[in-house]
Image (tube, rainbow, N blue to C red; front, top):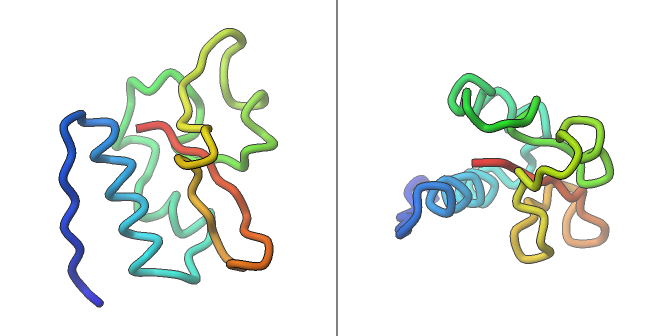
Length: 93
């Protein structure tokens, strides 16, 4: 598969769809791969230090009382190893 269509009504949700499409096209993608494909400078006004982080590390990169990441269960990016125990990553878009 080398082509996926993503449609969205809101810019941040569309960006989340693009990241999900990338993971579908690259099922062995790592956090480092995501950071390389979507560097922090793509989203300079995001309000957080990193575009992607492990769900357990949100408090280390996100200011207190700021909800800048897609962190609901259906918004998480599941990285390999899948499906047994995926590494759950949150993103800001």
